[in-house]
Length: 96
Image (tube, rainbow, N blue to C red; front, side, top):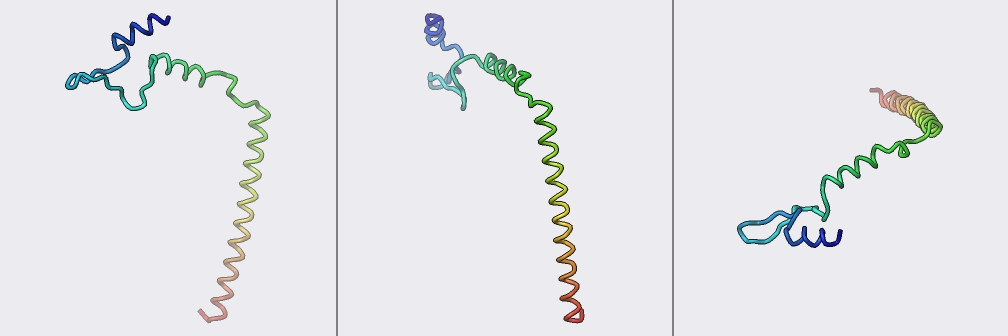
């Protein structure tokens, strides 16, 4: 394994060559290792069933979100009604 890494390093596998200057360039964000293997490992981790929340977690979170939406909707309706009444009162005082 180690000899393979040394040989691939000597041959420049996984690296791009800048033919104008003879230097090896690596694209921004390039890391050592095979790109396909990294992508495959990422997709495998993403698709694991262990990352999904349980049914109870989903139900409790949904309940909290719905209750919060109703609370803020009611709160904003009351604030809107109070501001509407206040503006109407100010217009009544100034005769507009």
